[in-house]
Length: 252
Ligand code: NAP
Image 1 (cartoon, helix red, strand yellow):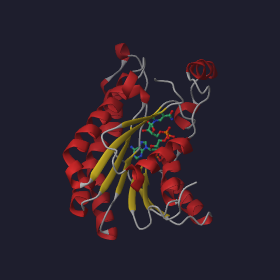
Image 2 (cartoon, rainbow, N blue to C red):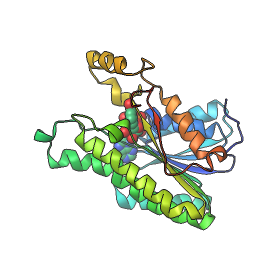
Image 3 (cartoon, rainbow, N blue to C red):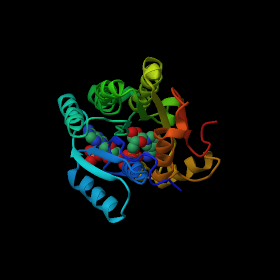
Image 4 (tube, rainbow, N blue to C red):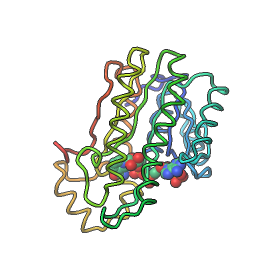
């Protein structure tokens, strides 16, 4: 059970908050008292999320913002707006992500670039802009949502695996650069989680994958969100530069 005031008065930015894992992360942080700036392209979904948090009477709240994370100027403008509205940002969760699967032999440049921009470049833009504020506040928690594909590689996902492995390198480098400023940076690497991203996989493939997972099931968005919320909280103060794998034992 979360402690309702654990993150009271803290400001978090969560990308990809409209659905799936990001949505669950927004609710988990709001349940601990955070004000969560939730961003994604679909504003109506974010507004529904804000209403849900209010309806549940969570101690924190959701502040919805429509942003395409692939638009560098929009990312910068959002972080500046958040800075002027709230003064500080203590938590950044880079969660927005896409897949455009295909074999390397037939993968075109756009397929590779779109995934790299959404999953990796955008995370760098957010880290750069938000860490400036965190340095001023001498405190911060950055959590990047990677994937076991970034750790193990995955046939048909060279673009996605490269972006997620890149996020791990970004995470460890930031952890080394900003540790002295009391800013931690960690990655969470989910395995197969029940969301829109995995919903479209053929049933046969899902069954085959389950057979490889010691816990014999896909994970839930809430299970990933609880790990992110732990890393965002005070109990994780001595953890940085780590990749926390949430995959039911798939990769061990
Ligand atoms: P999802 O259900 O497809 O949700 C993706 C989220 O990213 C949505 O909120 C989407 O919002 C947002 N997004 C995508 N492109 C965006 C853009 N250009 N600008 C702003 N927001 C954008 O995916 P998910 O399964 O929750 O995945 C969340 C993260 O976990 C991703 O980074 C994914 O790679 C990672 N992950 C997922 C799994 C899994 O099994 N599901 C496993 C490992 C890692 P809009 O469409 O409204 O913009």
